[in-house]
Length: 138
Image (cartoon, rainbow, N blue to C red):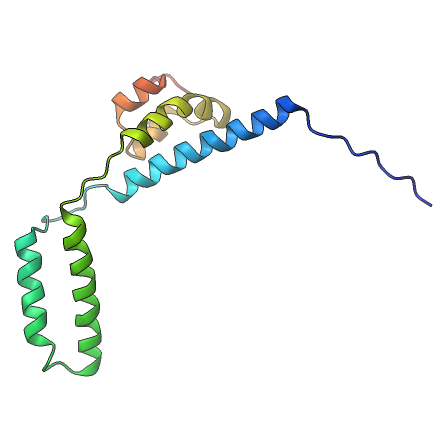
């Protein structure tokens, strides 16, 4: 009968390091996702008035539209209504930014992420400076 291997347990230090890595990764991911979600879009910005005007024109076109066109108009109406409700809402990135600032330097060093890579993803230079990541990083 083969001998059973003795199971070794992780040390408390190793468990703490894993937890720290998970927390840093989560902070970085949430901040980058928020930046991506609120990145300015190209083209003319929509105003509440232009959205309302388009919603009115959809309402007029719906009764006479063929079924497939009606489907697309209904979906556009739903999209525009959602956009209109979120138009005035501003996202508060301060908490996510604070978590990012506390985690980014260690994350960068551990993963070999350069200042240029952060900047290319849209992280502001001032935020990187607060995090302690300089231009000479990696």
